[in-house]
Structure formats: structure tokens, C-alpha cells
Length: 236
Image 1 (tube, rainbow, N blue to C red):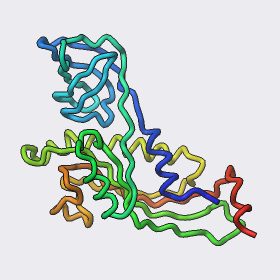
Image 2: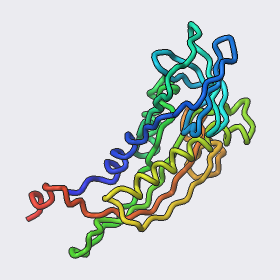
Image 3: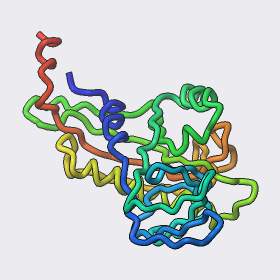
């Protein structure tokens, strides 16, 4: 049988890991360093990253220009030319099940950023046996990261979360466009969310933590999986 849509998306999400290339390092003194780079991806403010063999906390960044970091412990000048930035965590299910999963994580800094595929989702199965299209899908996918809702103004949410997470969404769309499982027929909308709510009003958050991000509403066509050898075994 063909893979479930939640599993197809779930197989793409872990591939959204990237590398931040360091073009130059400026020593600001006191264990603070500014890294010049052409792409900051979805780097997070106040998050800790391992660069070389040392850990650093991000104190500020200018998207796709520079990152300012602070050594944790002994000050160590970064001497490597790049460091890795992890793929987001992946959650799918009904809103209640997703809330339970998020609530169960006591340290939200470990969870964030994360991606939530909203269910129930719509799969329109194709009954044309001659067609290579297995189904059409309408998806709602939330791309979320922690936010300081107490102190941030609107522009801060865009600077520190929404704009960086848009780069993750763009990478995801690129993965779909290059996947053999999807056709070229695709439409999508991106909704910036300062407060992540179910119906888009942004009045009450759907999770028990402060989050900003993007809701991706995606229509796509999924092809028959010709590599699947189980289809005929289940159907007479």
C-alpha cells in the first residue's frame, strides 16, 4: 500500500537540517563573538548551539548577515568554518493529541522549533486506475518556535521567529518540488502567526507555551509510489 500522507511529510521533515557557513569571526571581547554569514536559516535567539567542540548562546542576529554569540563557560574563539542547525521536531495529530504531546514536554527549549501537521487532513483518492496520481491533499502545517510574548513588539516576532521560520518553510517547499512523490501541481499560502491559534484569530494560543511562526496551507498531488511492493499483496 502507498504511504500515509502523515508519513510522507514525516519523512521529509528530518531532512530539513542545514549548515551555517561562517565567513568571518569578530572577537567582541568577554567571550562574545560575531559570526559573519550569508544564511542564518532558522537560527533562534537565546538558543544554544555547538560550534566546534564548544557551546555558545545566540544573543542577537541579523538575518542572513551575522550572528552574535556568547561562550558558555570558558571563552573560546570559534575556529571552524561552519556548524550544523538541526531539523525541527515533527508532531502530527488532532489538536488535542498535539496539545498533550507539547504539554508533556517540560523543557520547551528542547521541543522548539517544531512542526505540527494538523489533523484531520483531507486525502482525495483518485479512482482512475490508469492515472499515476494516487491522491490530492489539503494540509495545514504549523512551523513554530518559542517567542517572548511579554517583551517583544510585532516587529520582534518577525525578526526573531517569523522571518527565520519562513526560510524553513521555503526549504520544505523546495524538498517537495524535488520529490518524485509529488507532481508539479501545488498551491500554498503562508500565514504569519504572532500568536498561534486554531482558527487564525491569534487571540488564544493553542499550546501552553509562547510561540510564533507560520501556518502553511498546502494543496498538492501525490503520485503512486511505484517502489511499493506491498500494494498487490493486500488487494485481490
